[in-house]
Length: 66
Image 1 (cartoon, rainbow, N blue to C red):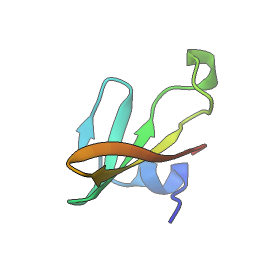
Image 2 (image 1 turned 180 degrees about the horizontal axis):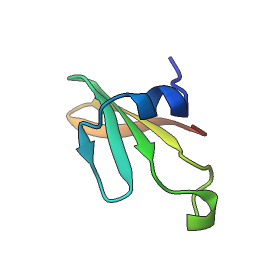
Image 3 (image 1 turned 120 degrees about the vertical axis):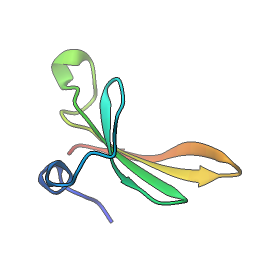
Image 4 (image 1 turned 60 degrees about the horizontal axis):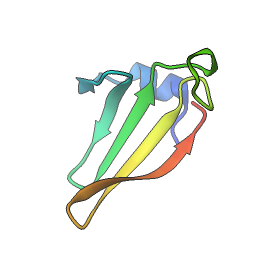
């Protein structure tokens, strides 16, 4: 399932990283909403990053515009 920027912004922030806010965390999945923009050098404004736990490591499996 893809989340929109508006959906993710409405969710509480679980953790604030240096550039991203962690919005969803399960034992095997994390969804981050970036606070960076194209002007900062990112490919998208408010990029959404989806990570999955694979063999004990968090791996980015999807990135898309928020």
